[in-house]
Length: 576
Image 1: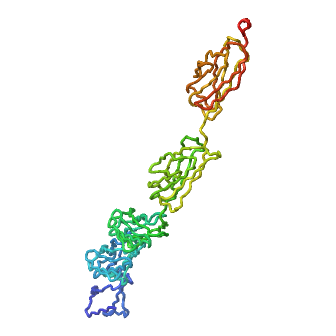
Image 2: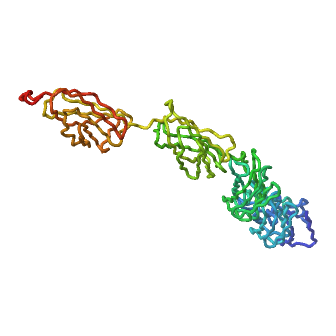
Image 3: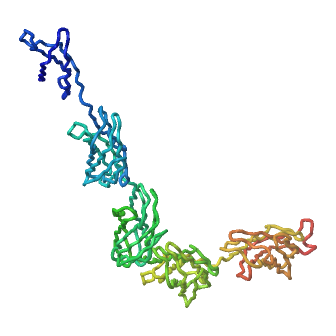
């Protein structure tokens, strides 16, 4: 309450003014209504008289009101810097004054890198970044601060939520004001991801080299950088021979093979190498490889490869014999001896085939690439140093001559034997048995049948006919001769002019010969006839003889012909 007094007189119809200067200290009870009171000065009223009320609206004192808005990327990549933008806005009715402080507590998988912003200064203690500025932010103005951070590996595949806060600058609020939250998905940094696969044979042979193939594939999102290292710890029993590939170099320490490559393997690319090893003993070997480096910090192991190692394969020689089922004395024929290698390896060294011929056969000659043959008595021995591949064969042809047919008529049987060539079986192995029936030399067997008329007439020609048949096993050879010793009283007239036979007579002996121009096959026959004439009547008996190529003559049947005198002749006159 304010009290004012004055002893000065105020004349009638006059006034005296008082001016009170006041200060609004709060707008809490606005509007403010005020009334003054006057008393004394000789006025008989003892009660203070009020003035008219005066209403005054009290406005608050102008103050700044600051807030903070935060923005950042939706996604970020591990190992790559990104920015948070912090905007301090003044929505009050007075400019800021004093220090404005922004605080940002970073997630543990973010690393503070730096800041930018006019008038700002920032520092970090642990994950807490504190930034301050004394720059004035005008009414409806703003001030921008940028924080640069980096996502660490631990953030890969996660979402980072971040909030900042602001305080000070004359804002009457004593509690820091938070910004909006910003969510950023952290994606993994591009990097290589190396995988390794291994391949090799299912089987192998002692002391025979074979290869393992190792393929390194980059299934990551970045090319390799630096040295890629492949290791392969060979099992005992495998000996490293060599290794390498495009860009690869390999070395060994004991059983451990180490191969390195400084070349770049692109995304989705691959690089391969081969390791050549030699198994020194039989057994089952399981082996893996591993890869590391090139920017991939984790080691990867390949699939396992199992190889069964066996002792070296050997040849297995067998001989198969073939020959004719029949043969003829005096005519050469062939035995075919086929040496087959049914083993798993080619033959080595000398292969020997022996064939002890039956006594009815004699060795003539042989043929066969790479073979040499000789005979001592009935034993034929053939040798070769030519190699016969696995599943291959080599053939010998023995030419023999049957010198006689067995008296028993049974087939001769023959077997060959093979040995050597690296076959572990040292006992000669027999072939199949080949039976051959030896036939005697085909021979002709001629017979002659003679025919003649029963009755004939003196002085008139008549014919003796001959049928020569071959009942033997072979055709005739050489000259066929028919001889007919005519009885006294018969005279040779003429012989055949066809069939290759010619006839002539010396005295009573008629001889017909073909001079070898015509042969009679087995089972067939030829016929011929001669014309004769009787000089007197009587009964004439006659036979003929046939022979071939100097063979034993064969006599025909006997014919009988009665020769009569002509009916117009007087026998008593002519002596018939």
